[in-house]
Length: 527
Length: 89
Image (cartoon, rainbow over all chains, first blue to last red; front, side, top):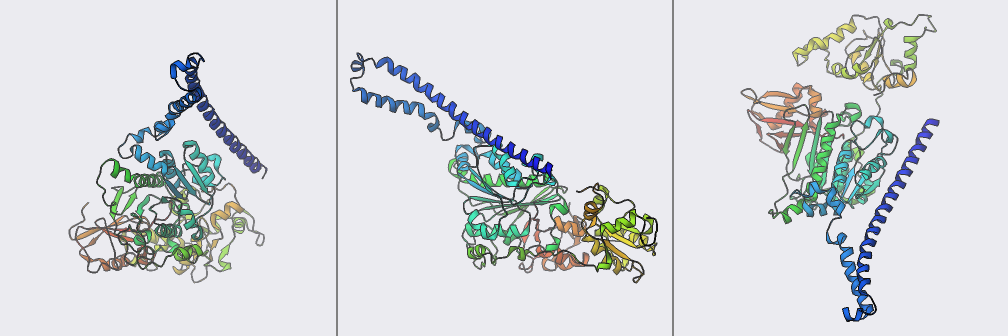
């Protein structure tokens, strides 16, 4: 408690010092600018002074003193004030953006388009961090950031704007610090809460382009619907494990019912995946560069969208119809790594963008469209009776303590502990003496093994059943990471007859290894 | 790589690859697109409900609509892809 207060206080101090420093830098820049102007004006006035001798002025100019000083003022205004007005960009901007300015795809006009533009980044995680970094780096005028989460240690391997010091901070604040130091010219707008259907329209309407960098099916449908209603192009990306997807949706952003507009998320994926099959990065894993690639590509697509007009007007390229809609699939361990799928136009019966649309701004604002319900929810698994379950603490007693009732010494061999996590996770850390039978193996084991489709997998699948059948007298304790798969495994084991018609006890350890770590062994690794 | 004679290649991405525990199969061609899911269900019981129902399907890198593209036939040498929506990020 005390140490967290200290950390909090130090963070506040650092933030305050950084704000002061930023303010000082701004003041210095202004002071230097003023000094420079003063010098230039002084040199001009000196010249003026040489001629403003009362005896010579009439001869030299033949005009009234007052009028003459006005002329000088106007002249000096033009000469001294011009450096910042003569060029459309500030001289520091020429330098900062020089490497992209000299490219015909961007050029001066493209840079001005970026400067005028506003982009909203929904989700400042694995996708949003790299996307925001490149967009802010490129000089997009306004970048909005939405996220309701706080930075966790397990985010840092991929969420490149957050640092070790910002663990515990809101993601939006952490990203603002990093982005502001990257490019202080960009106006950052913070929305430090989760996007809801009630707030979506009012937040999204202020931006030119929206980037979907979120992590749930519900938010993907919500953002897409809001973009369709508001006529905003949407750059949508996602990533899990070694796979990623990228689409530019609702582009061109024609009105609802106009078949010439680009397809929306619902056109491509009209049905959400079943909730129980949706895997998060926390459960499925994610490789940093995989999600990084997708986020970087989102920034690229956004830049292309924002500077598109430039290319047509200033490079004298014929205005051509928008590129046909595509779904880019990235698969890091496949060959080729990228596949570009040609998508169709808007779906005739699309619930959002077709003439038969049922999604309206009113429905969105009132919250009557329930995206969470549309995508389904998973209720916590409660598949076993209470006598089929044991707490981590009580299981620890069986392993570590003398049985208070029977006086028996603890014995790891008195029972079988089956860990049903996948092999990779089992390899990270496991309880001593546990037997690994991955959940995927258990669920695909058929009661009659002859029915198994892949012949080569029979011995392995049969192996674990046989091994457990070899010790019919020993009770089986099943453990997993969080206590869900273990319950389903117990049920499956009973279906496979491993409980010998109820003669052998099979049950699971409630709350899995997480409960073991929290309640028994604090040293057991958390991942 | 071209599939064996009389076959088409089917690629599984993301959740489809996890469910089938493989990234590709070679299946006999020709086959009606509308009967593809039934064939996959036979090989991988449960796949229709858990994976295929929400997937995008492509033939030779073009999006197809299994429900509405009546009469579309998957031919020998075609490359079919099963693309579940990835929603994490």
